[in-house]
Image (cartoon, rainbow, N blue to C red):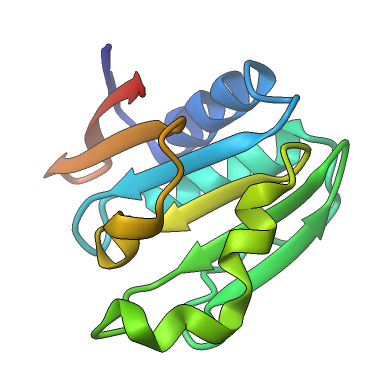
Length: 138
């Protein structure tokens, strides 16, 4: 499926809408270049799950946790060079709890340990505030 959003607010709204379909838990992988809308999407997604937390990219700390209807983990793996660097983060345990919702920016770094069942979202910068967003459930 595909959508083009024309503002940050529309990208957030898309995040809210998608979150409503995943309230029972799951893994969401976000692909796209810097500035393509991944964190903006996550803001809407987390808001829809009744979290009052301020959403910021966890680029320097790798994982942020938010409380809402479910425990939400937001990972940003941009600064990691190798998947070996994440072994001590406890991702298998996080993925293993089907009630958790996990949002991963730059998931290509851990491709070999991603759950087989997940949602993949691809963001593409078009111009100014326009983003092409494609998604699929695997």
